[in-house]
Amino acid sequence: MVDRRHLLALIPIPFLVLAQAELLASVLSGGTGFLLLCLVVGVRVLVWWLHRAWAHRAAERTRARLREAFLRSPGTKAGEVATLVTRGVHDVTPYVVGYLPMRVLAVVVPLAVMVRLAFADLTAALTILVTLPLIPVFGALVGAHTRERTARQWDALATLGGHFLDVVKGIGTLRTFGRAGAQSATVRELAARHRAETMSALRIAFLSAFVLELVATLSVALVAVPVGLRLLGGGVPLHTALLVLFLAPEAFLPLRAAGAQFHASAQGREVLAKVPEVVERAGVEPPDLSEAEIVLDSVSVRSLENFSLRIAPGERIALVGASGAGKSTVLGLLLGFVRPDSGRVLVGGVDLAEIDREKWLAALSWVPQRPTLVPANLSSGEQQRVALANAVARRHAGLFLLDEPTAHLDAETEALELKAMRDFTKGRTAVVVAHRPALLDEVDRVVTV
Image 1 (tube, helix red, strand yellow):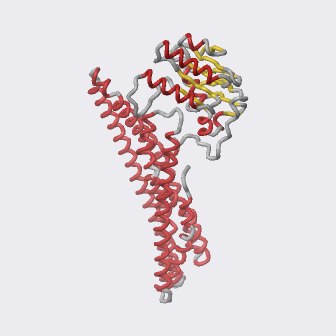
Image 2 (tube, rainbow, N blue to C red):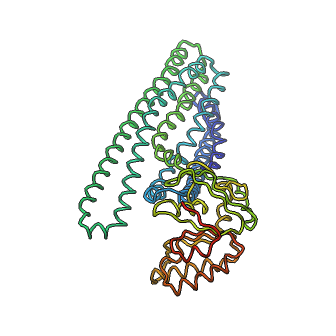
Image 3 (cartoon, rainbow, N blue to C red):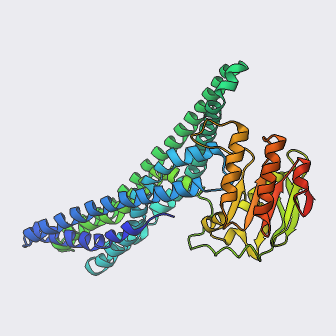
């Protein structure tokens, strides 16, 4: 889901760090190579600039993928989706642009520095090797609290965004019944909770930054002070001492930067943790619905519990039951919009979760209970007729799903629509949610939910 191709631009960085330190130590110890040093510094700046440009492009591609994944995720609340696709996906940018590169450099740069210093000054290399793990250890101790606080902060934001969306959608009803003021107070309470959680997360971030900076500074001092004393005593050449002094901070710098970016990208990681399970590979081709048996195998979700159903190829069934029993949920399962908490939906022996969603939906013809046509100034009955006409026009469809298709039609129109559906569904598999007796006469089997 996260585009990581920009990390390839970091390959030259460790070599440029070593080259810059070598040349700088050589120039300051009386050697040559000033022009080459300027060239290396310029190349290092150019490489970093190119990496940042590619990183922002990678972040944009990642945001686009996340928006698509969240919008296509079945069963996700509208309020949470609205928060994820707006504020949420933008919080991923610091993770892609800042944290991922620093995490890579925090591994390769210290390793390159220690290998070089092992040949120049083994004592300094061993000192770095001993003190270097202190930064990730202290960072992990503080990071455990950061993850908890960030999760609470995100939950507060998602709750606030979802509730605010619900209030906006229902503001007319709230004003009608005089409840707008009460909901305003609720929104203020949720905003205050989010503010408190944000300040708590920021306090931990500042504490972590202080701890990491202190540990890194002391670690560099443990390398620099002994080298300086040995230089004064003649125990180490000037070039070697300068090389150690220039490379020691470079070994700790990526770890310090990674620690800082860890907190800046905390919200982004929380958003990525909510990415639905999306099959990255191409999905399985849908089976031929004219021959495939559809099976709901001990499915449990929402109001349904251990619901099982077998639909033979070409069979037309009606789902009946009390309001809220789960009839529309069964259609949602067949569409793939709802995923079962337990059990499976099988099509021709293939789990529906493994079938390519776009190709599966292309093989269906579906009429929802309340069709929405935008733009269209039509009555409920007119919208129902247009939706039915569109469904019948899908001649290639092998599965016909109808949710109360004649609920808003008069008797005469209903008779005409039933005739059209009778002709269209002949030889095709059809599942109809029905209350009206006329619909029950058009099916092969009635199933009570």
